[in-house]
Image (tube, rainbow, N blue to C red):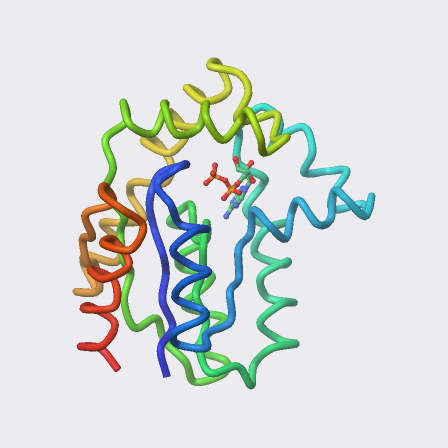
Length: 191
Ligand code: ADP
């Protein structure tokens, strides 16, 4: 069983690569960004709470996101394995994830980190903003804020997994297929 954290800054290609990983390895994709957007679309209380944070490019509070992930894992605990995308984004979330997996006798196998320079990310996010309809992709100040939040709150998560010898760097620049090849190379070695 593989339980993978796909890590990387906004716009690093986590969603795109997750889809390919799901197809090849049959893992269950758990994207907190997608789940939050679904809540917003359905107008749930959680969605309403998350809206302002997301639109500004700030993190939704840990307790809310952790509870949402816990609920999802509970209904899918028979999955072949998980790919976590956009989660954990804080050390607090990483600790909570380890705790909740423990309940099912599971652990994170590895954290794959998509490495992309910030100048490239800015270009990608602005491009995505033209078609995605995502407000957080359409405004330079919001993009900058997400990069700032990533640097301050999310990069410590990499250190957390590095201490567990689970941190694997993946070059996140090049064609989608070539990046996926780097990923499959790592995952096949872990299987
Ligand atoms: P991206 O990585 O491209 O910025 P995501 O779809 O992963 O986009 O996330 C969009 C927004 O959803 C984030 O900016 C944040 O507001 C919220 N979000 C997603 N995942 C988390 C999380 N694990 N913790 C807190 N907020 C989150």
